[in-house]
Length: 348
Image (cartoon, rainbow, N blue to C red; front, side):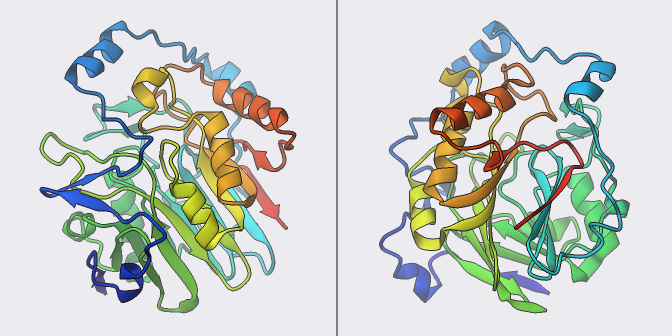
């Protein structure tokens, strides 16, 4: 099944005057937020690459096994969605397995050793996935936030498609449908900001593509030709929010007002240093906590940290700064928590 929902064609979407719609000019999407200045230019990129100092401090595997242990998910525990509550398993980076209301959802799956055009170039992960795609339970839906290599991994897409085929529905941003079709995926729904769809076998589950402040690029000529965003999943009993990758912007107050409160959110906390380079497209832990509050999340799990060295901060700093940000406003670590790779938690 191939489904494409074109921007501007949904009557309900046309009536949403209280939210920011996507903006595209000359074939390229733009960030409409006052918090966005511009993407770093060539001179900024060169300055970052050659002048910025990396403080990541990745230690030996032996020390990593102590500070960031990898747990093997219990296959029997995650075999099927829980009869009650939300079960979440952090696979690593922005990949989480979320199970609730009878379905299993995978977010921005990357199981490869590297994120890049090939497995011979690109950033290499310093923490392996806790399981393989063959060891996953039945997956009903995959949501993709944007097309950057660490969020849209070709090998992982192909392996998931090979294993699950037409039984797996892909929810992707506007502009990504053709890419998905080219790599063999045909049960695909492409959405613009604020557009909705569902699973044929689970019509009570609503998937909404919601905004973020970010960018997209996989090559030299495709800058911002694909939209970026987050995902709101609304079930009959629980609601889940996937933040993908983003800077802080007013979108989250709009999302919270329209769809909150959420039972669980997966929010990025890493890749924020140096701020002068990263702040236009990535949140720091304090801003992640603000998003947690904006969308009215009951619980949040931290993602986008502890897997790839993608910025200059020390590899455990996002966790520490998250704890400090929570303490500052008197929220508990249990409300916005970090997990071990492969760790499973049943909430509520």
